[in-house]
Every structure is written in C-alpha cells, then in structure tokens.
Length: 125
Ligand SMILES: [Zn+2]
Image 1 (tube, rainbow, N blue to C red):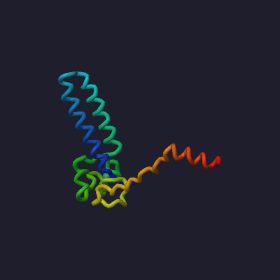
Image 2: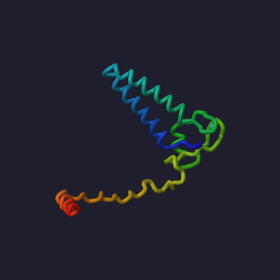
Image 3: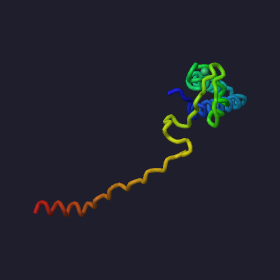
Image 4: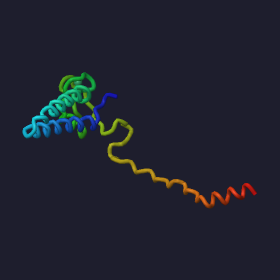
C-alpha cells in the first residue's frame, strides 16, 4: 500500500527525541553518547525504510508528512501526492478515533464443587 502511516512519523520523532535526550545525558555520562549514536543510526534506518515518498523513495521532511495528515502533501522529488493515514486500514473512517469497545462478556459462572459432587451422586444412583 502506497501510504505513510502516522505511526511511522511518530516513531521517527520519538527516535529523534530519544537521541536528543541521550545527547544531553551524554554531557554528564559519556556512555550515553553511544546510546545517542545508536538512536541516531536507528532513526536513519527508520527514515530510509518508512519516512520516504512511497512512489519514488525520495526523502520527505517528517514535518511535511505531518502536514499531509490534514491537507494534501506532495513529494518534493516526483510531485506525487503522498497519502498519510492514521491507520493502515484505510476503510476505517478518520473521524472515529477509537471503535466502541465490545461489551465484555462475563465468563460462564463456575459451578460450585458441592453441586457438582451432588450431581455425580445422582448419576451413580
Ligand atoms: Zn516521490
């Protein structure tokens, strides 16, 4: 499916945020610099895998993709319109954020052991 999902974009931002946090922590403890490097690498991998134009694989700014949620967003490389969806399943209307939860059915009442034993006795009679 040639769409970009909101989750992809959010995850990209989360990786960047964690990278920034690790960088700040690295000032106090240098070990965090390694974590920052790993997070940055992860971000680049994620960017390469998901945060691209689905048509030409050209780079697209994540902020531009976010704007694509509200209005149309066009790829700067090929000009194709990029569809950004909140869910992978596009048949779900965008307005309804969460489907009403299915009424949880109570588990069948457990039989009381004494009743069960009484029944057993009846069978044997
Ligand atoms: Zn493109």
